[in-house]
Length: 206
Image (tube, rainbow, N blue to C red; front, side, top):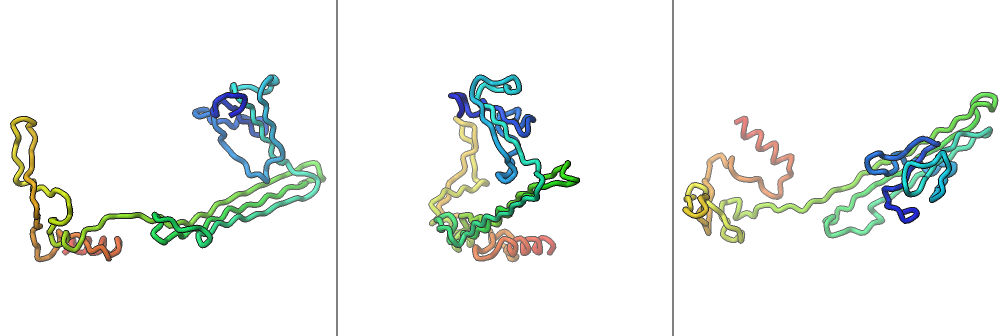
């Protein structure tokens, strides 16, 4: 917030060119700190080369090289071994985050032409733990009496005269049909997703 204006009332420039998102009035390209030479923020009484928004005018100028060679390199590492484990992570807080980059600039031809290059990279490997509900051994066998949910038999639904909707009958114990091939049974909770998928595909081919 600049000059009491809204956060989306600013105008961003990069080396004199517009760097403002036309939809949200936010900054499009955020250059690396090593690539920034200087920045300028104007809040009021803009000059003729400024304008475009009622808030602040932010102009970022990047490096253009010099008569001598200069360069930087950096690496920021964040590792899950140093982070606390939350309840949602279920003990698996694997995280390896690498922020790295480098910049280099200097003279190209007879100190009349200069260059500057910059690179910034991100590598992120992170575990995504999920809490899922799996059926109990009793539910796998078709017994839902201890599940604390209402199981309906869709074949016994009747039409109510008031709501004209089908109101199914509630069953306290619902047993599934026992098939010899057990193709309608869900997989055991201790099986992995890949193993369950392969077993399901093999049954379809048989």
